[in-house]
Length: 238
Image (cartoon, rainbow, N blue to C red):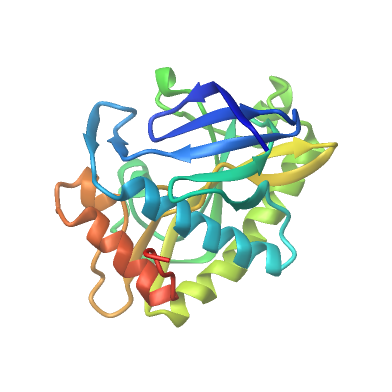
């Protein structure tokens, strides 16, 4: 399959057309950003680490029967994905209180949430990705009600699979965001799953092993990502 012109360049990834209109090349770059792009740095190996991490997770989800856009790895920094009509909302599940939840509600970080919470955010950097509800999504036509409901179901299924996966590797899946789109009318998981888009803590020490290390200036960002991968059995040098 032939890679063609760039369709879109995000804060950390680029998307390219191919000679097949149903497929695209997703390139993971070394760019790292936080606070809606206000803090940006280049971190060596990040693109490769996130690309291979995402491929591993997408395969685990596919094995569990969760439909995704992922097709295959193409190189250290690239993978082939189905071209989706993306819904402009992020689905967020929280298993433990952290981040914006603590700021919004004044709750202490680290509180186990039972049952896990589900939240929706509009993808719009200019507005700061505001929190929205299902009624607003339907009213403004950001997604059809049935597609949004399917996205919610899949988000919880992802939680069942990945919470256990990380727990078995000595880590807590604190929270994460997912994006979904349509491919021939079917709702599929799109975008990526990597330490850039979730929070992971060591179960015993509560050491942060995700992009909060970058947000909070804790250092050793890629080293933490690679440690997460190593615990899961990912060989980044393969």
